[in-house]
Image (cartoon, rainbow, N blue to C red; front, side, top):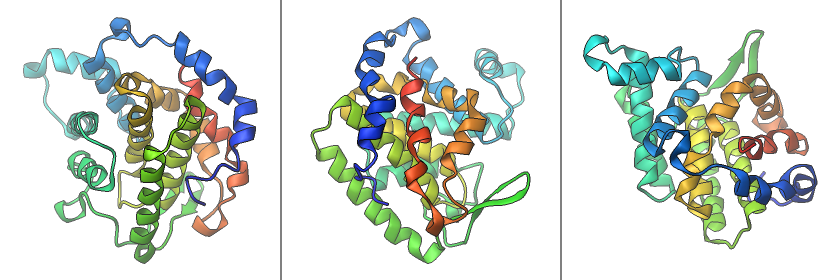
Length: 253
């Protein structure tokens, strides 16, 4: 599967794509929802929550206002590192080097130093309540897959895409990245970050305000259900990807 694949674009347009321009026009990009800095923090909190961090947005913002009264624990550090990674992305172009730097920043509490900002050299799987849910590609093939991945990302960034196509390819980027699972840890956080990063590269800085991470957190069961397209990297069936692709535009409703 290449992320430049247009095979599912017509179905996407019929299901949700043709609504995207209307959703964008109706979405409140002003600071009425809390301001840019606040929304960046919210993105990091919700993305961390998806991965099991127990600090909700209200608790984190109260910590921000009263730092001298709180003991900084690992979960707070995890969120603050992810905020820093978002801020780095907001000031830099989307490319492989910058994504690896983002991972180095936000994985400080997740991995030992030698694993941060580097592709994995171990076999990894995704485990659920009933055991192994997904086995990612072998570690010796990760670098090759990521070179192809960023070759396609660069092609899409340099291409003239309309709003429908931007959202469509952003979701495919998110999906494919999650399936490659290139890091020892932090893949979900990186996938959600790169999806939004791509949209902002194509449609403008204001799209960092999209509440995509919040939407995925509030629909977490569906998020995991639709991202699961096969038991392993070689059995992925992207013909079933339309349900996942529809999630990103729905965050604008």
